[in-house]
Length: 475
Image 1 (cartoon, rainbow, N blue to C red):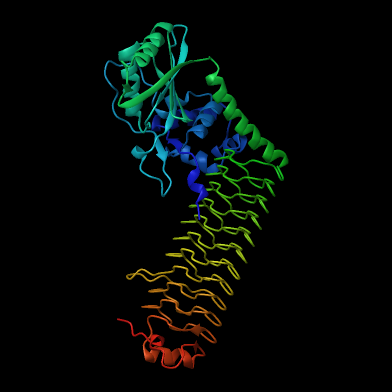
Image 2: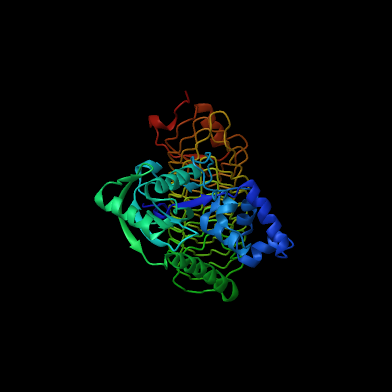
């Protein structure tokens, strides 16, 4: 199955400098905000995003700009990338880091487009856009680009903005310097800038900066609309709602297919029957959210907090739930076939009747979980040879045929009526496990004495007489 979550655009992330945070904290006081939480609420930004900002951690660039804009601050100064002109390249200081999804190829094998605005404060300026190949990873890269542009075209050029999107470098400068730049590129004299190949250049209108500002305003206007009145059954496919505060919002039936909701706060939100197929919900807060019958196939839910969420009959086929918190979640009859739940927390979750065929459950915490009647055929629960995983769960009636349970600690689990035909049970711990009417056949990992002990406890071995595969002594 195609993982739709992998098709999302790369995100530029950036942290504030320690000095920038001090300036921002003073701005909060100056503007009358008595707490960071109240500031987050007023700007419709998730609390987690604000917390990360004031802890000098990476956050998405558009959220970074919004925070600085609302605090009446120059975002480049808060990031520590706005420096006075020097005769030499500034000291290396990493401050920008693209968010790379698991499964993507390395950065240097792909083409990414970034937009950098360069402005002259002293003279009338015009703009030009350079199409180039590469990716900006650090302040050192930005400084080298600016330094080399000035060296070639003139001292009026200065980097003041970065925009993610289609890989283009936008520069602003005096008529003379821009003419020199355009001429050099068109003639082939200037074929690269700081190692980045240049493909084309064109003069821009003065409205490009306004276009970016309008794009950001549209995003936060939409967020405000959702918060105030809710948006049922609306088409928001592919929209950017990342880092937004959407607590208790009504999005039932909404089309959010491939939408960016990474880092968003959707706790208590109504998302019943919403289409979130391929959506990016990584790091999102979905505590107590209502996702009954929601479509989340192929969605990216890595490290999302779904504790207490209502996911009854939700479609999570092929979803990425690595490290997600699903403790206490209602997943009754949920469709999780092929889902990646590696290292997820399913403590006390209700998975009765859930479809977990071929799901990755390696390292998952299932203590107290209810998997009665669940289908785990082909699921992988393989244990670590040093620290076996504890499955203390209700697996009564579960279909575990063909499941990899090697090394798993099933002591105390309820396997009554479960189907374990063909399951790999090498080094599995079945002590004190309830196995009444549990069905075994062609299993790896049983000695004759172990088999007889399980039969005494009510287990059923369905291997036909004389079938040599019924007992395979573990090596």
